[in-house]
Length: 442
Image 1 (cartoon, rainbow, N blue to C red):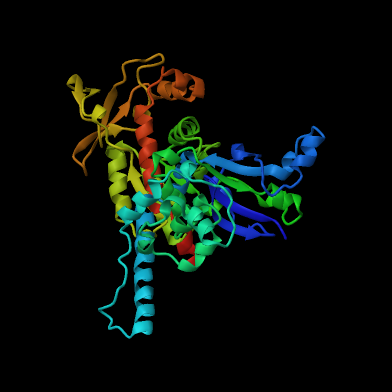
Image 2 (image 1 turned 30 degrees about the vertical axis):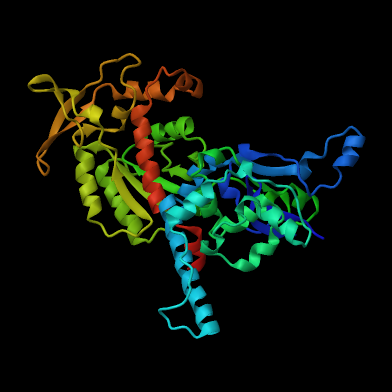
């Protein structure tokens, strides 16, 4: 009979392969998600229980992770809600045209007439998908070929206006429970789009996303080393920064605040110094990568100061491929009135686009210096503003790099500013992410 492998969310199968690995879903998971999960495909549980033994963990191995924790990975793979909507609308339009074509062939109707059903709008389909929490759906196995059984399989969906869902009706016969029937109704998009859609329902937050490979490996159809977690090289983002300090800060911030997606981000190796330090070199680096048509996804991150603004404006004039983009550290309200030392003494000033390097996004109320201020330095004639630098910035960096998950949990360190930086960085990468079906189509 063979052995199956599926990608499931809350007990609903989204992909299916038999006797081979099929689609590689390793990018959805990290090593910590590898664990044994009870499998219906293992027929020997009674034997092990009678012998008072546990089933071999290797035969139950799977990657499993709550849906809410898969969502950030889906978005970095290109599956944000706006793109899910675009895919759905394309499917709906194609279904409408195909349905009209069938009706025209059968009835001889004109192109502009005929009882063509109006497919659900994306808003309607989204609501349909999330108003039935996965855990609330009956998963009782039913397989009798009679009307009573068919009605039980349809469950709460009996009498629903299912004809407005743009799907192939020939798949109705595959359902064996109310939950699997619901799966047939919503699984009309890329499986990652379906997961992103279901994640819109808060009740589905803890639904398990599971890719169980143990039975396949145990049966000899695949090798365990075929199942590797973490983002693939083509799915990661190279973050190019102005200096070494930026790299250390961002890597540590991701490890502390976004460990579930940290493997998506790579940085220039600065173990022996930054090879492209400074704003001018960073722009030249970008120009060089564009000329050699580098295939990596690259984000150039400039400081929110006068030097960064000048460099970002020069960067913006470059002709760059779609896999390269640049941004500045975010402007923050807290920087509108920031202590600044200049010829006229210490005054409050707006340091956005003038003096907010990445060190300003750390907690400046801890460590040896608890009254952060910037010092005005050189005048940028091209912009008509002064450049500034944070005083004692090395001290703030040292204090940040000593923070741990425990100290962050205690709330003794203010992470709000660096959170804003990560939010901007992730948004830029999500916007640039290429959808897998576009790669396939190419």
